[in-house]
Image (cartoon, rainbow, N blue to C red; front, side, top):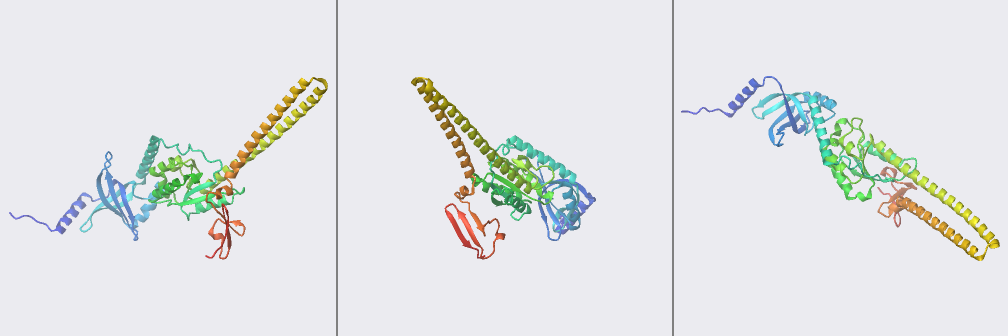
Length: 412
């Protein structure tokens, strides 16, 4: 019996006819985006997957596309509705037509998208992350750390060209009290798919030198709300929650707090608010030191006056006793006088020790002290240098180190 045979093109045409008969109209499907690529011609190419909810095993995968004329409308609609970009890892509900091409095979052509489904999935995922962090027992770990009384050694995580970073630095450098802040930038990508790994990498670098800093400030000023997805990442939140230094988050948003805001020691709305917080803490520390110094001075002054009065009273009694009492009573008064003098000296020594401890604390936060640990201060024309923009060719620079100063000339 002769076998019935088909050419490959006949088979593909047959498959195409079957698909058209069974999928005449668009259908709605739920899937997770595993890959997304925007082409230069405006088209968007995706790959959808589905996983088993119990084992997380891949059970389905298919290619999809959004042609440019549709993508121009769907993208802003989805982002404005959800506050999220279309990106790998999110779940979507889309209206598709099922297409089969003789050469390129089976694919889905996306015609519409329902952002309310993704919002529900995002909210569900966000709550799952929060519950997991609570289960891990780390939600309050960073908040429980004590901020330094003088938090002027700052590790900054930011994109180096971000306007928010410039605002933060300008606020600190031009504070009205002239407080000196030592800032070290650890550059990171602050939005997009690479942001989470980039910020975690910056935290790892800071961790290697954690003893050199008082606080970590994470800055992201301005930008679209859709760029905030990385700050709801479980991995980033876990790293921030367990970090050994207090973290101040100033990621520049007005919506509900991100998960990183929730686990950070302190959360503020903007980079300038983060700088204002640090300046305020320095002012509080300055006021406390001033109040303590004044209180000690007044206490010492009052005690000295009291002891002087006591000594004067005892001296008068001694002189009176010499005239009216026996030598034995005179000796007793002399001993009393000696004990009082010793008590005054002891009190003075104790108060001097307190002042010495206070002076030592102030000295440890002075520029001279920090110079001993490798920091330098460079001036141009007598003014402290904070940016390359402040120098020009042939300027004479003075760089102060712990054991002297270095003079150099700017050549380029």
